[in-house]
Image 1: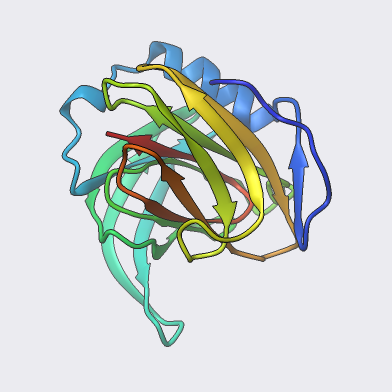
Image 2 (image 1 turned 60 degrees about the vertical axis):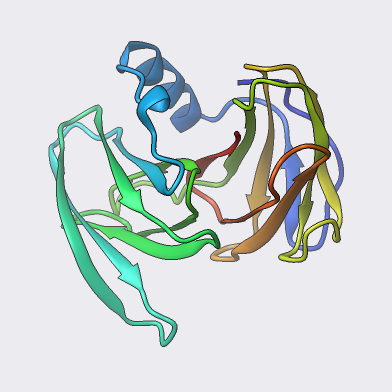
Length: 210
């Protein structure tokens, strides 16, 4: 989706080019999956749990509390080499969740209302996912120009992606984070509501402009 931009090493964040193995799997799966984008509620997030392993996974989705604990929300069965997609009531600011299952690595992620995210469910024997992809998708019906920056203050921070998108276009940037690092981002454009996002390794996050 879109054009990947190659750039510099930032504080804890490396911009990447190319497609990861899990990214390629997601691309192949998404071409066959039924689209839910047209029916998405702007107050909900769309979460896809992608299971590249050869065994079925029973995945527990939990909310991460401010104190670092978890509250179980729902259970999802994900077939081998397949995915499970569902809507999630979400706040306007990124909320932290974690997906866990027996024999899997814990998969922490954050998502906000209106965003779409793919979370890769990896076995404990696999290496941790080394990157994420952030996509800006213009579904507003008009041209949108702006920037995606680091930090939780809209319009401030280092620019990681500048975009000028016609309706229906998208652009993406690959990011690599240090270990379990999580980084906040903000998106602003001339004719859209600003958005906040949070990402670490192992997700494919879409920020949808409406």
